[in-house]
Image 1 (cartoon, helix red, strand yellow):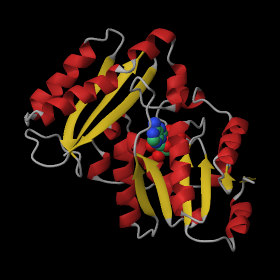
Image 2 (cartoon, protein in one colour; image 1 turned 60 degrees about the vertical axis):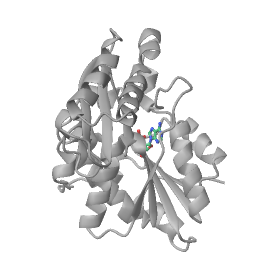
Image 3 (cartoon, helix red, strand yellow; image 1 turned 90 degrees about the vertical axis):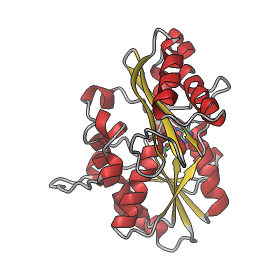
Image 4 (cartoon, protein in one colour; image 1 turned 180 degrees about the horizontal axis):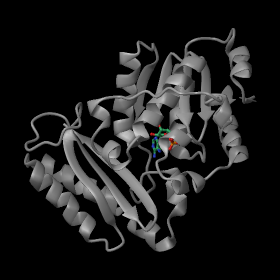
Length: 278
Ligand code: AMP
């Protein structure tokens, strides 16, 4: 049975003498197969699995984006039940940020480019809530999706720098049959946009294939991905990146591991995806 708790106090009580290791899967709900894959990893590797469901206002720059973020707690809890999750922590905003809360965690260079540049303050919100959740749960392991590759790097940096003992584990991106990465935001795509959205994955595959064929020029890899995106009139690219896999600095020449990544708008919906190479 999955137990649902809403307050810090209930969470502490539920975890008081629980079996370790404890694995945490932080989510914003509207759970899908991508989240399920993280729960399955936690179930396989930990004796206690905790899913958190919290739409974190501090990581949204645009109030409209926050307002229209999809929510379905009953469905989410049912999915956690199906996956055999031990505990769901679904707090209210005040439970995470009580009145008077006045601290933010700001991660440095790795949080600056890409999503950090496109969404100012986003990673401060992410780092702050994740630090709170890691501490409240006392997690040994935390499972994050590679789909949000920069988030993994930012959270790792935060945990290392703040001496938080939770190990951050990145899990592969789960995709639809046509290559579209699963995302809670996909629900906002209208049928034409949904049909167009797999162009992100096609662009990444085109970049990866060109790299596999020996191309090492960052500009030529970016141009190939941008060219593939341009075949889809509904796709409005936000960025097309070939960056160092560790620092996320844009690369002139790919010499080691790199991250191909994209952010693309379809109407009011902004999708991201990435492909590690090397
Ligand atoms: P979210 O609820 O969107 O904040 O996502 C919660 C966690 O699920 C994050 O670690 C995401 O990276 C991860 N996630 C989201 N989509 C996918 C996916 N398609 N495949 C794997 N993990 C995912």
